[in-house]
Structures are given as C-alpha cells and as structure tokens.
Length: 98
Image (tube, rainbow, N blue to C red; front, side, top):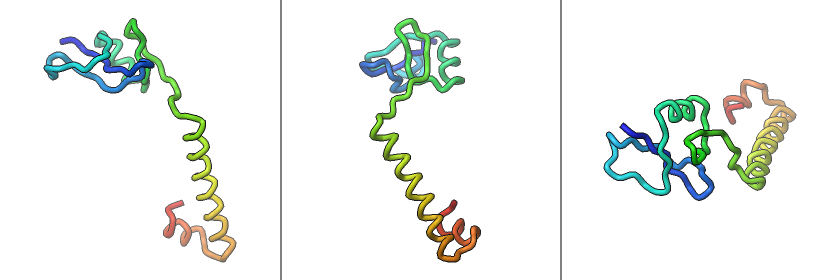
C-alpha cells in the first residue's frame, strides 16, 4: 500500500490517496511513507515537501484575516449595543449565540 499526497503548485495539500483504495492518483503528487502520512495528520500539516516531510503553513491571505477580524469586531460591537439597550447576557446569548 502506497500513500500519496496530492498537492498544488506550492506543495499545499489538496488530498490524500492510497493505492489500495484509489485507482487514479491525481497529479501533481508526492509519495509518502505511512509514518510521514500519520505525522502530517497528527500535526495538522498542510504542506508536503518533495521528500515527504510536512509542515503547517498559514495560507490565509491578509484580506481573509482582515475580513475574519472585522466579523469578530462587528459581533462584539453588536453584543455590546444589545447589552447597552438593557438586554441581559442570557437574552443576548439566546439571540445571537455569544
């Protein structure tokens, strides 16, 4: 049984394939040992190097990070506005889940 990491042009993991389960292995791919595969899974690695070693890299863009932070800020602000209007913590939580 041979395992393969299907990767993109920057070696970012797109999926795992096993020759025992899959008749077609997409390219590009890197052959990995069972130990390398398990290490990548256990450590939530998303980049597979040419030698089969793996690591985690942050693939989120600055724009995506700013958007996520903006969403958190708006939710926090909305919660505070509801509290300022006199709602209790329990009522706010029932309305918006925070």
